[in-house]
Every structure is written in structure tokens, then in C-alpha cells.
Length: 396
Ligand SMILES: Cc1ncc(COP(=O)(O)O)c(C=O)c1O
Image (cartoon, rainbow, N blue to C red; front, side):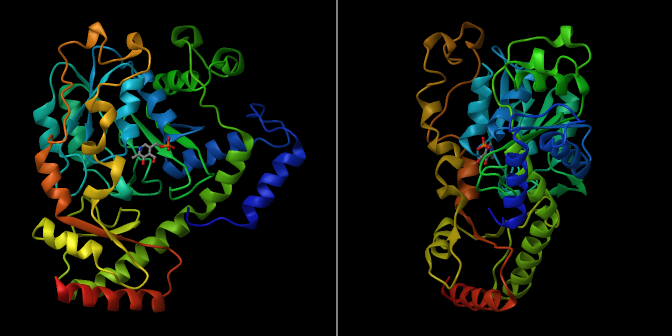
């Protein structure tokens, strides 16, 4: 969480005074924060359709269900992402197939092309730490093979690739507003959809009572009618998110400015930044460096320096596939008959996972390291960090 203050407090107070905290569907009601946020975020993203949910994972699952993905299907996910991306595929009854990331730390188009089989129904590129995957290449491959693209933009709210907002390149794009994200209400998620039918099915799925509540609003309901889950957002989350959205561009601009300020100075110390698919479009959460080998990256990330700490992507716990014990053990659900790994329709699909998989990603992510950027840093703060980085660079 980067910024929160009095405006959010007042927005929440307004909802409580109004007394209606359940999602208000009536645009004529005095307060309808969810509707307002959805309108504002849709415009910000320039998305065809958009709605608010309780979590990013709820958005991913709702999208997969809406795309018709289920038992018998494989979905490609990158080796570097939070475990929720892979688990959302299991929640839909399908099997996640892990593919390599390249030197941009995002899904490798070459690896995707090589991994597609007739069982592949979708790919989930992930914009980790606000870093854009190569959406032009990935969308072209998906189109060629007739498969869906679901973007996981949970860590990249406000970022863009070639000037187009992350999360709006694919058939659908999921966002997270949990505490660790660019804008936050503590928890929360969003889903952008290109096609109306996909949006409607996802929208129905996100609310188990989708028919009675949204029946009046959706066309063609009979066609899409199905049992849903419960990822419905409330008015308090939306009230906070509306204020957060008004802060988003300021946060992203400050992150990028600070990242660039530091990079402009430290590049002369021999610190080389990791290749990016779109450096200007990144959210600026991190400044990432590529080193010759793992030992140097490790040295960089453990050295102490003022104000700032280094980290190798490889050491980010559940954000790398080598830590996904649930997959290694094929624990796809508690009930065996609901476990996609045991479902008859999934037998014959690729489901071998191990600590040794994706060696190319392991190598790439071991030789990279980054520092986190804060939007509130002053030039004085950053000059101290730069001095620290100069010392670090000398010791590498
Ligand atoms: C890449 C990625 N995907 C999905 C999620 C799930 O988001 P949420 O925690 O809102 O369910 C996260 C959350 O950390 C994430 O980082």
C-alpha cells in the first residue's frame, strides 16, 4: 500500500452514514459506490467491460469459468508468478502447465509457442512487479492457435504495454487490490473483459445469487445461467477504491520518476538493468538489474545499504514455481473427486511438477536482483540510496 488518508476515511464514513453497505444496484440510490467505481475504472482502463470483486484470485477464477475452461483443458502459466495464478486454474477444474519466463522475468513467447498442444485452451501472462509481459507477441501466438489470453495484472494496476493498459490486451484481465498492490482497499479485485458474453458469465459466476440480483440488468441471461461462487464486492471497498483510483496516476508517476532518477545515476557504476518489454510502461515498483551470474546477484541482494534492500526474484517464496508444494503433491482439492489431478477428463494431460522444472527460468531469475522503489522518496533520500549503491557496485 502506497498512499491512504482522510479522503478514504470520509468516503467510508459517507457509506456508513448512508446505511447501505451491500452492493447497491440502483443507479438512482443516493450512494452507489460500486457502480461509480466500476464506471470510473472502466474509463481509466479504456476497457470494454469491467467489474469489481473481492479478490484478484476471484477475478481469475471467474474469468476462467467464463471462458469455458474446465476439466480436459491445460492452461499455460509462467514459472514466476504468485501461486494463486496456478491455483485459479485448478479451481476451474483444469490443469496448469508451467512455462519458462525469459530475461524480462515474464512469460517467454518462445516457451509458450513450444508448449501449446491441442489440449491448451488459454495462457495466463503475468505482469509481475508491474513489469509488462510481451503482450503483442503473446496475443499473436494465442490468436494463431485459437486460444484465450487471460492477463494476470494483479501486480500491475496502472501499468501499460505499448501505451495500452495492462489487463486490457487479453480476452480478460484480472487485478488485485489487496494490501500489497499499487492501490488497495485491504482486499479487492477487478476484472476487465473484452467480450460482453464473457463479462456476463464472469459476472454471474462472481455472485451465487447472480440471477435474482443481476437478472434485470443482464441480457441473454437464460443462455448464460449457471451456478456461481461468492466474490461480490461491497460499498465500503468501492468507496475506498474510488479515492485510491484518483491517486493511481500520481503513485505511478512518482514511482517511475524515482526509479528513473536512481537508474540514471547508478548505470554509470556498472549496474545494468534487466531487459524489459516496456521499461516506460512498467509501474516502477522495482528497479531490476541483471548480473553475470547468480553469485554476483546474491552479493548485490544481501549487501546492506541505506534505506533500501535488494532481492533476487528466485527468493520470493510462493512467487516462484519451485515453491509450489501443492502442485508437486497433486493436492488440487480437499475432496478427491473435486481434485483436477485425479479427474478422468484430465488423465493424459501434463501434470509433472518438480523442484527441477523450468531450469532456464531458474538460471535467469537467479542472476537478477532488484530494489524496491517508494513513491514518497525525496531527492535527498535517493541520493543516499545512490551513494549506497555506488559502494555496493564497487564490491561486486
Ligand atoms: C500475480 C498475482 N496473481 C494473483 C494474485 C491474487 O490476488 P488476491 O490476493 O487479490 O486474490 C496475486 C496476489 O498477490 C498476485 O500477486
